[in-house]
Length: 228
Image (cartoon, rainbow, N blue to C red; front, side, top):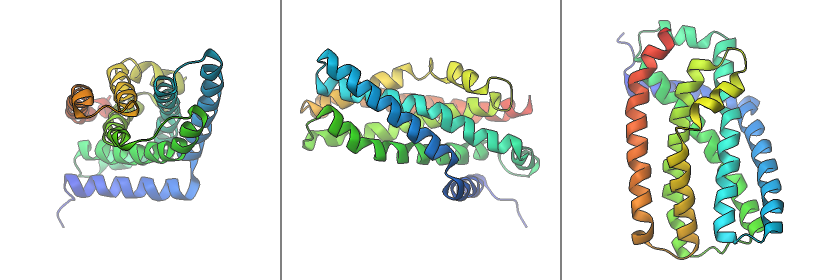
């Protein structure tokens, strides 16, 4: 029997992660509770300052998602290290980059779940106006989440299992993700203010280019990273 190819391997890793997460809820619940706390605190702080809803809401939302992603990354990769599951996958005759692709997809799914649950409270807390142009936030959210997931998965494989993993993951990924967070916040702000494609296109192209560059780089680096 031929070993599974790239897509089949990625799908298998994604499926196993999803089943474990559905059964335990470790990463999703931890990330969601932390993100909700950050969002509530931000809502009260920014409301007291009189910040504009269209500007403050997206910033607070993505800060909450970004910080909670650190916990989701650590929980996801700690599980692999503790059970020696990663060692088993690395010994299997499968493309190593496909392991990263599967882990990235499962982490992105966790973050999507967090974002969906947080969306309604964010609209309520910040009294954000929702109009048809706000639909531009959806593709921006997909691109931003994929970028967070691929960078988080790469650096999670590098540092999780060592001392101070939570801190190390955060230090590693957040500086790289600054353009991504700026882009998705600006798109969200412009969309909530009624802007169309002309207002969001530049930032959308930046997010797409950012994802492609990071994705290709991460897939190439992963094999070298896990060998160390």
